[in-house]
Length: 296
Length: 201
Image (cartoon, rainbow over all chains, first blue to last red):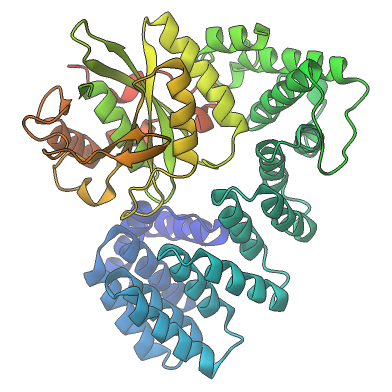
């Protein structure tokens, strides 16, 4: 593994927020051994290595990183958060919460500390308190997309799908260009029992996903579009069997039959040999998909 | 109470699935057959989700497809498994309970297995069996600890946890794929995962 490729990989992980801790640990350890002076990038790598080490349980390495970072940046709020994360690995939750409280007393605008506190509350099962604090945080920092997604996730795991949809719609407003939030919204709407809304949102996803492709209609769907077409098939089939109430008052499209037919065609195309040609392999489990498509 | 036995194939697949996604909850279904004695053999497992395990549309489709696959292999869907997001969490509720309950409609002795993250690295059996008591699913607490001698829950061989651990440290789980993966790339073999399965089982 060369130094340049390791640095490149770590920079990509940082940009994409990838939590590939094993790999991060491997790459960052190489760098730390070979290069002492990396300039500002070095500190970012050190922070990355610290988080990965906590994640994979190499607390000895984490402590080394933390020591170097706090020597270089005393009183940095960012290092304060890292100290907290390191504490979370071994200290009892109430000790960590107390530490976060102290930091927040000194600076109530430190959103990163606030979010750590909320995640500890959630971990120890104080869900109501976590929701309350997260809602307050989002009142203050409305633009925090991750915060809205976390709120949606909490509501979903508590079976409160309507609230989850509300939280997700804020994430959609803030990041309308991200198709994955649309997909999550569609699947949440389905889980909430609002089939017309789910169908509509799956279709919006496909529209966004195919916007950047050349002549998508002539080609089999690829990637996560297959998931959306299966969702469309599921929703349209159920809506054809029986009407379903929509809490959001979303109308059922008049062309439901055509949508269902199109979804059938699209899913089958994805599993055809042409659909997987670019992968150089055949689709797996095609027979069960075909009988699912034809069933009922 | 029925007896349950977990095969090497099922045990390895469940552990590979959990090991592949250490930060997320994962879930899947158990395939098996009832012996003449009434003992339930859990023969295989099919991994379903790791993205949004609390959302139902892909779960419904995955269950449907897995059910058909089981049928063509002459097996039943005999249970559900999941690993929680946090290592110290071995609870089934609320989503897992709902799915396991639905499986009971098709198989009355359906079981749920939750992965015990704390035991994953120890070489002990890292599974907590759940069975329904009335309408609530509870971890089985009999006179004997699950998977110990004399318990109603057994592995087909006592060395499975140790072997699973060795396979994971070799990185065998890295190419393991579930239904979520398959929905992004339909060439991923989520029903069988042949590439990850040791050739001697």
